[in-house]
Amino acid sequence: MQIKTKYLALVTLHSRNSTAFFQGLNAVCERLGFPVEWLADCIYSESEYNPSARNKLTNASGLIQFMPKTAISLGTTVEKIRGMTNVQQLPYVEAYFKMQIKSFGKPKDALDVYLLIFYPVWVGKPDSALASQAAFSKNSYIDLNKDGKLTKGEFRTWFNKRVAGGPTETLKK
Image 1 (cartoon, rainbow, N blue to C red):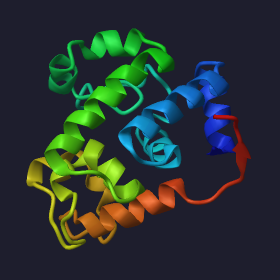
Image 2 (cartoon, rainbow, N blue to C red; image 1 turned 180 degrees about the horizontal axis):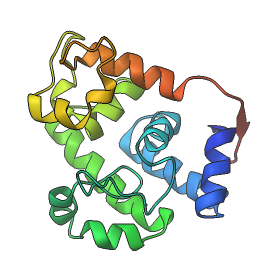
Image 3 (cartoon, rainbow, N blue to C red; image 1 turned 90 degrees about the vertical axis):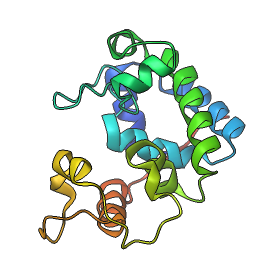
């Protein structure tokens, strides 16, 4: 598996277990049916691999920024998630994606994986699809053309820039 060097460095910084973590993440992605690199980009964008990351505005927490109601639906809390290691969060990440894939379909690319976290109703929609005002108000920094609206296309551009490029390293599966 090819993992971006900066992702390995961030896991080492926050958890000091990059090999074990990425092997576990790869196993999760194999079971879910999509490449580990797709979810790796999403985790970078959501938490920069900090398992105790917390969004002060929404209280979303953990590697993929579980919302409080989502954590409860998975049998835990965001407080407990913030106390877990990155490896301990992986079963919750997997359970979350199984639930989302059942509801919204299997992701076709890294953007779809991220949409299952960020705004699932956009999966399968055209780039002109608009976010709700509530979603926009919490993510107005992604409004690239500053028109007071957030489209899936703007989100795609923002995400692609956020995770673009960089050297990779090969890790054993």
